[in-house]
Amino acid sequence: MSLLLSSYTLSSPKGDLALQNRIVVAPMCQYSAVNGEAQDRHLMHWANLLNSGAGLFIIEATGVTLEGRITPACLGLWDDRTEAVLKDKLSRARKLAPKTPVFIQLAHAGRKASSATPWDGGQLLSKEQGGWETVAPSAIPQLKDERLPHELSKAELQDLIAAFVVAAQRSKRIGVDGIELHGAHGYLLHQFLSPIANQRTDEYGGSFGNRIRFPLELFAAVRKAYQGVLGIRISASDWIEGGWTPQETADFSSLLKPLGCDFVHIFSGGISPLQKIAIGPNYQVPFAKIVKEQSGLPTMTVGLITEPQQAENILQKGDADLIALARAFLYKPRWAWEAAAVLGATVPSNERYWRCLPREAQAIFGDVKVWQR
Ligand SMILES: Cc1cc2nc3c(=O)[nH]c(=O)nc-3n(C[C@H](O)[C@H](O)[C@H](O)COP(=O)(O)O)c2cc1C
Image 1: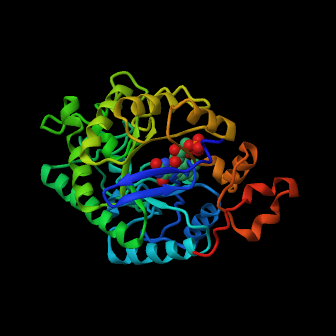
Image 2: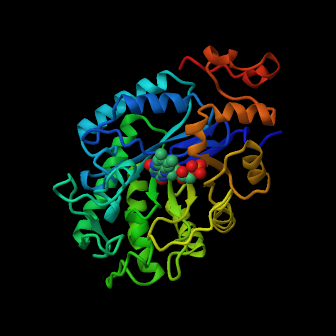
């Protein structure tokens, strides 16, 4: 019996959310928005990967403010217009796919905002290039020759919390089943957590308790405003001497639990170019394992997991509860179908594609005939 293809339940104040299997399409920026508004490319990407057989799909990093976008082409959810367009494109994509739960990743890039798209180099954009002033816990740039971000005042921290709360309310209206706050990749929340980026001398910087204060306050405010499934992606290690650590991640997660956190999604890195990442298959699984063991929270792992048996083994060992994949789904959009075929299970699918498989493998479509919503 495959654990990867077996169901899983995430709980929230609103109730339980059943996932048909434990495969998650990780959030993936499409850098295709115009003024933060979703485009047909998003509709295509979402509909395609909602037809992947995965049990959960997470929409890309979505800026809660204009200045919080990573690039000028990033998706946003900061006004009625971005909300209306996102709702329209998403509902159209969902009508073209089996009924799969969808989460949205709400983000603020902090000092890593105002950047070029990856294929244009990813560097900080000047005002002349369409960039804008960035903000951060401290006036420390990501790269030492970059212009300094503006150090956020306490009043501005409250404004940011309010922006996340309003974006969570908008998320509810667009009909997603859950929210993942982006606390990883060196973006704003990670910048508060990490002593590399956070060198404040007030109650939001310095000790562990002070560095986690803003992310905890923000999480609690969003939880109050949003009753669906709510979790957070965290970079478990800065991979740098004196940086944020896996033990701090586990302690932070344990403190999120009583605030009503429903899951954690464990990544690593992104705070500094000085990071030395020991990269390889499963390289972030040990981080998920300690967070899961110590916090008891439903835990998602991600990063260089490419093979069905590899994913199955992680679950069988109890190192994580859910397996997220990004690049593997870009390469093989029906990855979960292949996983079902390899592991002898069934997946939600579109009957128009059933003839893709040789007759002897068609059992993977078994009793699951979810097409019309
Ligand atoms: C094209 C692309 C866009 C991405 N965008 C996001 C994003 O919006 N938010 C995020 O947290 N991670 C993002 N990531 C990182 C992935 O979610 C994932 O964590 C990472 O690629 C490692 O998983 P993988 O080895 O399965 O690709 C992106 C990755 C790719 C390849």
